[in-house]
Image (cartoon, rainbow, N blue to C red; front, side):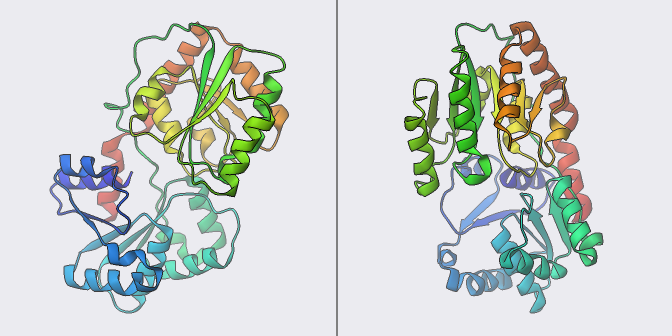
Length: 337
C-alpha cells in the first residue's frame, strides 16, 4: 500500500520520496520502476536516536507533507509537530485497536497534533470517533486498493485431486493459528480431500515455535505446511482452490483483497471489515473463536462443486474491480493533501 501510494502520487506529478529505517527493501523495485526516490536512514534504527535523527532529516528536507504508515513513527512525528514542525502530517492506522494500553493511549493523545488520521478500515475509524471525540473531524477512512491489472485470475480452474486451501499471513497471535490447526486436525478425521499451505514470515519466536510444534503433535504434517514469505504471491493466489484467513482481528486485509482480485473463493473470520469484502456470493464467514463455526464453514466450502467454486471466484473478481479502484484510492489522498 505504501509503495503503491508513493508511485501513484509520483505519476500524478508530485515530488515523492520514501524513507525507511530498516533496509528490508523487497519492495524497492516497484519504487525504481516508477522513479520514486528511496532512502534508508540507518541511523534511525536505534530507538534512542530515532526521534532526533528523523527530526534533523525532516528539518533539512522541508517537505510539504509527511504520510506515516508506522504507528511508532506516527507518534514521533506528532511530537515533532508539537515542537513546531511545519509539514502537514497524515498518520495511518493499519490495524484495529484491541485494547487501550499505554502505547495506544499515548499514540491517540499525540494524534491531536496530526492534520489527518487515515484508518484503512471503517472499524478502526469508528473506534477512534467513538473513543476520542476530539479527533472526530480528523478521521478520514481510505480502504486499501489492489491493482486489478496485476492481480488477475487465470482461466477457469478445473480441480484435480485434493483442494488447496491457501492462507497468507505472518506467524503472529492475531492470525489465530492454533485454533485453525486444531480445526484442521478435526477435519482430517472426517475427510481427506484437502490440504493447507500457509505462506508468511516466521519470526522464530515462542509463538512460531508453538505453531510448528502443534503441527507435529496434532499429526497433520501430511495436510498442512508452513512456507516462507514470497514476493511471487500472485501466482500462488491464482493456483489455489480456496483462500482462507482465520484471524482474530484485521484492518482491511490486503491478502483477502488480493485473493479476491485473483478470483479466489474466500472463507474468513467475521471480524472488523471482512463483512464488506465477503458475502454469500463470493465466500463464507465464520466465528474465529469457535472451532465448530470454523469447521462448519470449511466443510461447507469444501463440499461445493467446481462449478460453484468457480462462480464464487468470479463474484470475488467482480467485487474487487468495483471496490479496489486505484484512481479512487489516490484521489482520496490527493483531496486530503
